[in-house]
Length: 331
Image 1 (cartoon, helix red, strand yellow):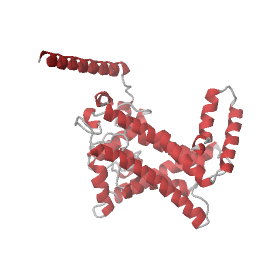
Image 2 (tube, helix red, strand yellow):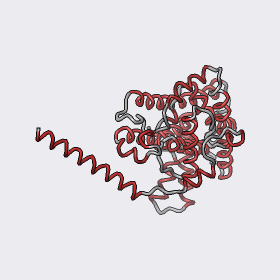
Image 3 (cartoon, one colour):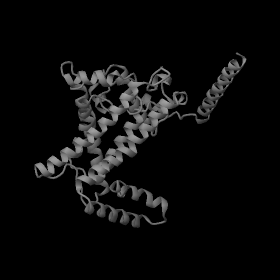
Image 4 (cartoon, helix red, strand yellow):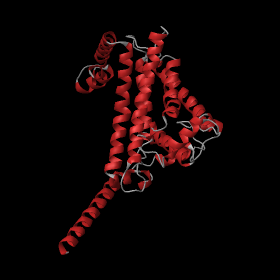
C-alpha cells in the first residue's frame, strides 16, 4: 500500500492546493518524487499500482457509492434517475436482490481480471520474451504535446477497436462469444452504476480491456500518459453508466450515456462505439443526434426543485409512518 500513496500524481495535485509554492517548485518536487518512485520500485509494480490507484479513485469507489445509494436509498435516488424507478438496479421492484449483487460482484471480478491480464502481458514481454514493457516506465517525464498525442491516439484507437469488436464480433449471429454477451450484458434492463464492467469475462476482455490497453501498448505510452488516459476512460464509465440526469460536461458525457442506454434498450442494434464517431461514419447510430443532445444537455438541473421534491417525499413518508402508528395504537 505504501507505493499506492507515494504515486507522485497525488502529491502533484495536493502540493499546489496545500502550499504557497510556485509552479516551478511544484514541478521540481513532482519530478523528484517521480524519479524516486521509479528508481525504488520495479517498473511492473509502478505500472500495476498506478493502474489500481486510477481504477479505485476514478471508477470503483465512486461507482460503488452510486450503486449503494441506488440500492439503500431508492426513494431519493429515483428522483435523480433519468428514467425514474426504471433506472434503479432493481427496476420497479422495491427491494434489490441476488441479481443486483451478482452484477456488482461480476463487475469487480472483471476489473480485477483486466488488471491480472495487464500484469501477465507485461511479465510475458519483459521476462519471457526479454522485450520492452508495453507501457514505458522511465524517469524522463513526457512533454505536454507528447501526452496530448498519446491521448488522441489512445482515445481514437479505442473508439475504432471498440466499434469493430462490438459490432462484428459481439453482435455476430454465429459466434459463441456473441451469445455470452447477449445473455449476460443484454439481460440488463438499463445501465446503472457498475454495469460498465458487467459482462461474461471473455466478452468483457474483448470489449473493455482490449480496446483500452492495445492502443497504449502499440504506441508504448509513457506511464504518466497512460494514467491520464485511463483516468479519462474511468470517469467516462463512471458517469455514462450511472443513469443519473445530471452529468459533468453534460454535452459529452450525457451524449455517451444516451448512446449506451439506446444500445441496451434496442437489443444492441446500433451505437457500438463509446463516442458515436464510428457509428456516425458507418450509419449505425440510433437515438438522438449530437445536435439534439447538445440542446437537451445544456439545460441545467434545477437544484431547488430537486431539493423540494426530496423534502416533500420525506414529509409524505413521515405522515405515512404516523398514520400507521396511530392505527396500531387504536387497535
